[in-house]
Length: 137
Image 1: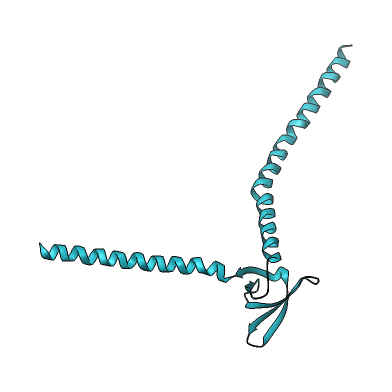
Image 2 (image 1 turned 90 degrees about the vertical axis):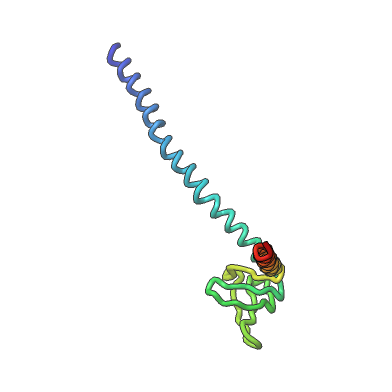
């Protein structure tokens, strides 16, 4: 009778020990999910959305570094015809697009450049005024 109780107690300890040994593995998987898998899925989803929005006339950069303007979008075959120079066209896959350079994206950049020029001019004017005040006194 005493021996069967020992075996029963030993069996319950083995089960709890095996469950406790899986807890670190589960925690490692959770950390990998939130640090690696989830951000990668978000990035891929955003890239797919960007590729689906490509239209004729967009300026794009391919993953190989070629910059060109989209002349035709073939949705069926997931291909684009890019004009990389006057009258020179190449056919590429939509998945080879790494970035879209639209005029809409470039406008805020131009505005920020103009704004920085205005700020620099304003600073120059303030410096000139302060020099005049020092010379006047």
